[in-house]
Length: 346
Image (cartoon, rainbow, N blue to C red; front, side, top):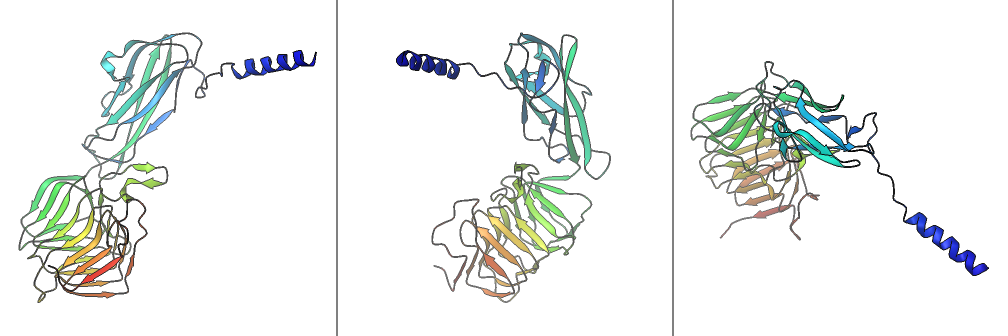
């Protein structure tokens, strides 16, 4: 009798373990539901396409559904979408079996805005089925920017903070030309872009409004970590051999391969003055200077995959500076000191 009871209980447990678990769907009232009610994009620069975002829609009913059409409520907002790789023009009479789902991909290319600051772009992606309709709210902010592709500065120029500057490929300062950056100026460099200075650059920020050099991705890698902190978003700043009297005051340079590379120059003239600034999160080196006369004061140079500061010859004076390396975002070269000073190179 005991053996029969044990066998019976075991069969019941096995049957319970094999019972099919119910599907879990996002909350909502209709048969067609969305993984989120609003799809938000980070701030975008006008005319530049966003990264592609995605959501899922679910058939939460116990019967097959037919999605009659998918469309934008406004239609001219700059959003584009596809459903399971189909463009919206082909999204008619889509069959969605009970308990099944579809992927929806959305991107945005905002047009130029009438006002200078970030402007909201709102639309709805609508899924019509039978007498019902599912609405997905789309939200983004677009920001007018000065877009430069392979730009060369050939005359003395002052950049003001009334508009952001987005750099593709390179920004070149020609010989015998001075580029001045007013306080609050932001330069956003696209992947692989470089600032090449063969003349002179004077970056003149303030404590409240520093000048910023960074990558052009405005979105977030994680909920609490923006892409702008990642090393390798752009190439860096290069000071050519005949470039002198360069100044960076209250300037933040971050997220590149190199912070500043200073090529070999005469030691009879000052090439670089770096004060009250921050250079951090580089793939390789924050400051690499060869035969350079320079002054660095009240500046933080931190976090690199190789030497944080490398001085190869030259005449350098550092006052009240922090040089530290706690890089964890890229593979750091083993046994590499934060500071290396070499009197000569072969």
